[in-house]
Length: 226
Image (cartoon, rainbow, N blue to C red; front, side):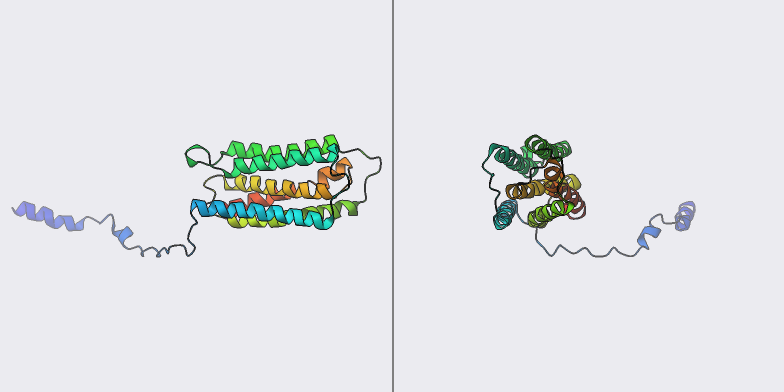
């Protein structure tokens, strides 16, 4: 019995392995977010409203600037129809959940961004002309400024309603949405500007696509993850 008592007394000399953990200060309390996350139907309504508002903004600015006289000609109407179809299909791929409610994969988003850029440039090259004398730099800058002003409202609305809604690859999802906002603005400026020089159309009319993809990637990485 004395041996047992000696062994029990020696247990006090064994250091407590959890003593260092117990000495740590308690973690800071975590508060619930002040803003409630919207339900899926509410988010879908917000997205649909943002799309309609963005389209209305582009149409309003295009009407304000004035539609080009040859907008009904096949050389002008065909690329507009192609870009409109591309933007509509892109929105479905980027926003509509797939089977089991999962969003589109990274490869689909990467292909979508590439398709928007290639589709715009291909139609611009095929339907535009090569002029011997390029337009002045100020003309390019003015068209770029109008195109960016058409893109800024759809992009801002997308950043607002889609914040904290990307479960994965937020940068690529933001880039895809930004590029689609940009091609919407490209449709608007191409419906107004009648300058059909290929360099002008490809760069001055296409600048909102590149700007939207870059800004969308940054916004998605910073504020897009759920």
